[in-house]
Image 1 (cartoon, helix red, strand yellow):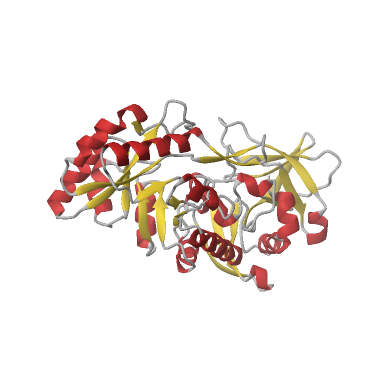
Image 2 (image 1 turned 135 degrees about the horizontal axis):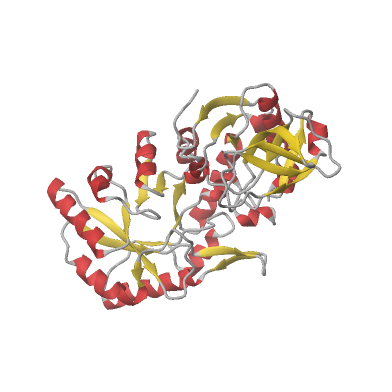
Length: 391
């Protein structure tokens, strides 16, 4: 969904991707991360956050928990990370990244709680009184204190499949009263997801019902229980464009993820401060029934892909766009499909895509490249989808 914008704003990334593939330095089914552009995106987001007094946690699941990129983001102003699950927390800690928020979207398993708490995350998000009790017991055992975020869910909130959980809005008051009595833990704040979403109708980012639920919960906890909340965390679509919205609604924290690579939905429709900094590279495997098939492994069911640029020479590739077909969500993406129509492609041609992804749920490789924007690209390393270096 970003290919036309990419051709206009970052053609250097396309050329680098083509050269790396055709020279054999990367294989098909590889995402390329443009480190220069990610750093500039980070600086832009950080500057806007400072102007609006908003704190940030980086989200790295979209880029495969990559340690080089995570450290570059930290060095340029977003010091701490939100770990989408405890395994990401362990990977980021190993890479030297401070932990901001752990437990949202995936609760920490009971057997892993002690090891995560000992990493001293700034906050842990909990969905239940029982999980808070577990944390309290472990903190008493090891002599440590831990701040919590309560995830709240209202009756009309938007919740994605596979992500349902949290405190019901009507139950948050009694739950918070119980948690307040537990030792070695404290309620630092609240969170809800997604707080903002792109609206095709308005062509902009809009507050969701979840955001309204979040702020109603803030009023309940502060006014009825007298809790002084340090954190009102409103993740989803956090970018230079949306950070002023966070301030306006009264939030304190955002969690940029896709904005770091310039791939929020808004980036597909309107030019933003952040530059698109990620492509997916594959290769024509074969042709059949007027379709071309590329090697898969990195396609994502919510990618909204439109197609790919195909070829072996830069100028010809830039003019050779083939429409794509998203795989059935129930299928294994052994291949991706492109409609040939009247276009010509050969086996072995490079296919370059640019769409929304979550690298950590693919089986792709990740190539980190610096110097693209200076005309001197340098491949820094090849990693797997979970941040482990391959070469």
